[in-house]
Image 1 (spheres, rainbow, N blue to C red):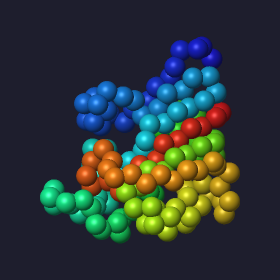
Image 2: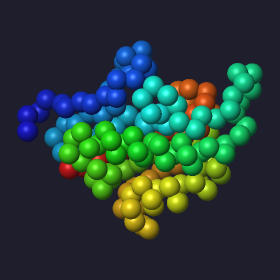
Image 3: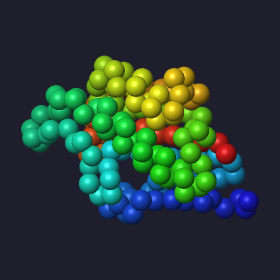
Image 4: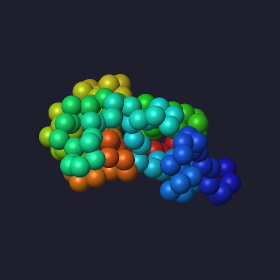
Length: 143
């Protein structure tokens, strides 16, 4: 394989607006940008927001987390890789308690095993790219 990077995107408007790709492969390493809960340009399980205060309803954290893994699997597949190749993930969440509650079952389902072989870090944050987002997950895979 050449040393030139291979890149992949979803073609969603915010990639062009912000100026980034979803994933970059150099050599045997694939770096994924933070994956959020979207299906095409539509957000999946958005948190209810009214624009005047921070989100207080974290009910959809698990559903959003699940979609992040779906999107990561899709983009990894474009490189001939899968979630089995993930070596590290960083989960950014608005509510750490809600993320902790959802993470075990969702991660085990996504990785297809009761003991995902992935280094994982959970970070609490006050805001993500869109106000309706509750979680974002960044991945690194080795192939």
